[in-house]
Length: 194
Image (cartoon, helix red, strand yellow):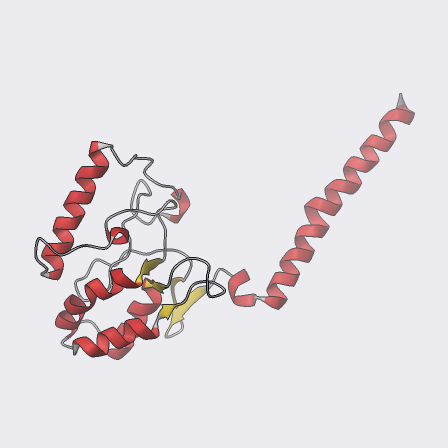
């Protein structure tokens, strides 16, 4: 029995060390060398102070900031420890009511009329509930409000959105997008919020 059990225990030990210790250390070390910023969580600092990660959505509620996508995380919005969607289907009355409320709030907050189309990503949560990006259309929808609140020319705010628009990955994967945290930080540098 010992002759049969010994090779199994040795292989268990060898594979545990190889796949549980050596491989993760090699991959982590290679990532730290090749992509130190991304391996560290794509952290963003301002004036030496950590303000967030460009990979995780954050709430911005002030009228002088660009707003992110709604978050479906619980127990509070934008909770990175509880990533996940609402799991409400498109015909669920709770989702329909939430979207209607969000559309009305956006139209009121932006001073747009009842016939103005609101970009879908401003009224629907992403699958993770932590999407850091919004569509270019969603950013442009908010330009007039942000310019008004910051006492800036609309063209200047629109140029800031254009400067922070990221193209699709590899030029064809996905859509052009705007990282809300990076855009709002650049906005604060241009004209600090009052």
